[in-house]
Length: 112
Length: 128
Image 1 (cartoon, rainbow over the protein chains, first blue to last red):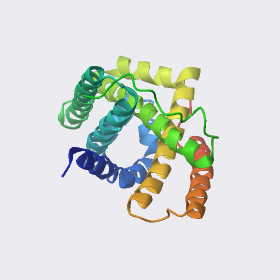
Image 2 (cartoon, chains in turn purple, brown):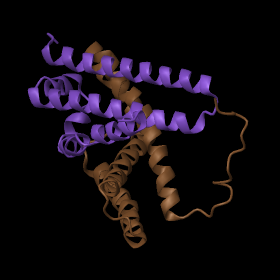
Image 3 (cartoon, rainbow over the protein chains, first blue to last red):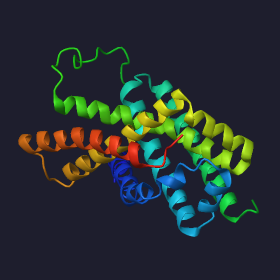
Image 4 (cartoon, one colour):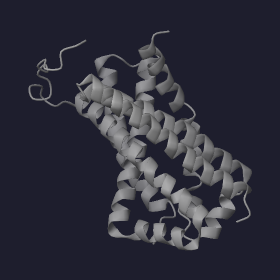
C-alpha cells in the first residue's frame, strides 16, 4: 500500500473507536466536570472509565497527529521545513499521549 | 525536487464561499483546535495526578470567563468535528455523494452541532 493511502486509512481507522467513546463520555459529563479532585479520581479508578480514557487518548491523539500532518503537508511549501514540522508534530503528540496515559494509569493503579 | 517558488493556483480568493467549502474548512479548523485541546486534556489529567492544589488550579481556570469560553468553543468543535466526520466516513464508503445529499447532510451538521452544543452545555454538570 502506498504511504499516502495508508495515511488516509489510518486517519479514518483511528476515528472509528471515537464514535462509541463520544457517546460514552456524553453519559459521563458529571464526572468529567467534577470540581473535587477526589471525586474525579474515584471515577478514574474504576476499570471502565480508566480504559475508556486510555482508548480515547490513544485514538484521539493519534488521529490528531495524522490530521495535523495533512495540514502541515498542505501549507508548508519548503521540503526541509515540512520534514522538520512533521517530526516535531510526531514527537509532540507521542510525548503528550505518553504523559496523558501515564497520568491515567498512575491514578488508576497508584495509591492516591 | 519540486520548485518551492511555484505560484499557488487561485482558490480562496476567487471562489464564492458556499456551504460545502465553508463546512470543509471549518472541519479542518475545528480539527486543529481539538488537537490543541489535547494539551489541555493532558494538563487536566496530570493535575488530577499531581494533587489537590494543581487540580483546583485547573478548575479555577475552567470557571473563569476565558476558561468557559474555551470550553464552550472546544465542545462545539468536538461535536461539529464528530458530526461532520461521520459525514466524511459516509462519503468514504461511497454514499451520499449527490449534490442534493451533500447539501442536506451539510445542513444537518450545521443545525445538529448548534443544537447539541447548546443542549449539552446546559445539561452537562458544568455548573460553576
